[in-house]
Image (cartoon, rainbow, N blue to C red; front, side, top):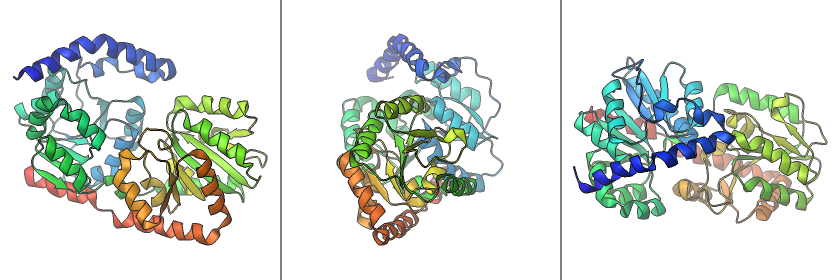
Length: 417
């Protein structure tokens, strides 16, 4: 064992008190962080499935991105049970909702013994790590136990690449032990290769393969009826600090009564805070959870529900994707495009760099620099039906042309299993 790997293991032990403090701190806003505590620290394994297809998806976005891939995997391995692991309560809840027949649990933190014990307990037939989940001890343990382990839908921003280069002595041998890597783009593959990855394939992004669930499209029609004949801006996956900017810009623009702002915060603990922000500004609001028609006097409709993103997007005339006004890297801009909604996003797009560039080139999206420009662009689109309809068509075409990543990834896996 190298000195870097030994030091890495020691650091996990030293950081344990801080990890426990962090979880308790997060639990003040989201009590679910205190649940299933032992799973996080690799204690008391009680597997319900073995020899399963194991998918690790850290949170909500990765778990949703795994859906079309899991569907493709099940077509090729229909008899294999499914094991899903996450790191966040919202990711876990999403997995439990999407995959009711799977065993769902937290992946232990990357302590050497915990990683080894997890794999020994479950003995998956192979493992799939979604996007950028690079856990060296887990990767080493899988190689030692001869469990094929793949990194798929892999992305690596230039910023993350610079960070990993600082610990290349630890990351390079771990990457080399992965069975194969399916990168989203040639640029991602190039950055991974520079870190030491081998057996690289470019397969695209599984998020393009996500089909809007039929029941959510039905719910979108119900939302439209509840809203009535108003032009609707839906802001999805907004992060802390962004809602205030959007509300200020919306209020400053003095939008007419036949326009409605819908805010769908990324994290449920922000629902109540958004109401406070609206009340501080004298903005009339209503909750989706009231299950009532939207009052014509309401300027803001709060999307205070989980798992209904496509329903909100389906009732939108224009959509804004959060995490992009402030430096969070942008959330999934492919989702609004897939339901034919013009997409707007802010200056921070490092999580979706290639998709953002492709959407702009296709005429499916507009990039804004701040909240004021966002509302200006939305107002222009509301006033120009022809331009808005052209963007709707472009959004659908953009989402369709990039599909097929899930099948390409399965083809890569088949070569090694």
